[in-house]
Image (cartoon, rainbow, N blue to C red; front, side, top):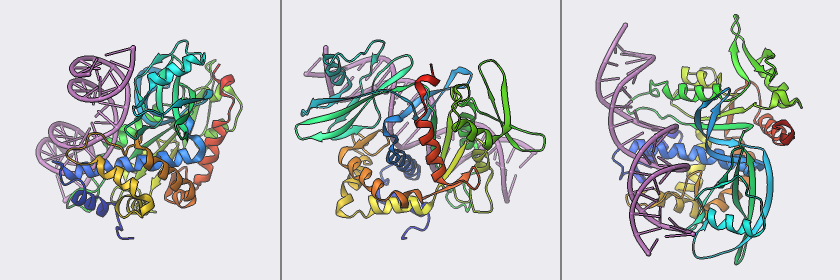
Length: 379
DNA sequence: GGGATACTGGTGGAAATGGT
DNA sequence: ACCATTTCCACCAGTATCCC
């Protein structure tokens, strides 16, 4: 491994890509954050959850809908799903165009407000593209297949209430310092959102144990050790427990000495006890992704580097390497790369909490939640 | 000296505005 | 009417400053 730490990688990005920015280190750090998001997003996609994902939705606090927080990724139950063939044109594919085609097919759009997003524009596609919204749901669209002169589109309606949310965070090391920055504000912000989203709330006992409390609609409640209660809810069929439950997942990458196997810093402790699951993307994983796909790609991966580099220049028009805006060719190669190397990529993640759990367990829990009978539960 | 806070720059995305 | 561009806001990341 040429870059033994992410801090060195960040330096390389400063020298090679972000030299134009006024604060090049900050811009490089921001880009590393974007890369963490992309790795997380394509991992969830590869787990078969593509059509459940929404990006940057305003999530209401549990029991306090006046306050919302934009969350990176949220997973929603699917209410409706169908397919649509449309002609390719030189122009972009807009929400408008898709909605018109749906109307011709007598697709029921009652109660939906159209959005003006573009599914495809100049070879850049929009991930988790919302074409319309209603009071209780979102209508999204993705490209299912390229059929020569036509595209097959997947149209799917997501229920507004998610069953899981993901947030990604990254903090680098200050110049000339051996430690990460002193600030804990970012951890506090993440912790606040993580702790206010779900009906399963966290409390401490007198002896310092982490317990969970969840209310039912009649005002009765259950209090139990947190992880036990969380598992009970995930594997239950009780709509009272599942109705407003949201599994919260945090993904962090290295922060100087945030983390060693025996010693966690305050920031990491705060996050670990606030998310239901806290994953740690290792330096080795992040470095492998950046080296293989962005710095020294083989011919096969060259379009990924191209999409990345062209997104960061003084004259760039539009970023085509983010969780939402992604170069179409790069998207195809990324999906292929993730499905072929899934075991390796899953190995890039350590589990910080719940203690002693495996990534496989999170995968199972998400699958379990995905397959619940949500139409009955949310009725 | 070190930890918390204040401040700055960078960016994506939704909404508002402009152009054809 | 339809799409492209601009504006504004929330959030991300790094660093200067404050305060004990």
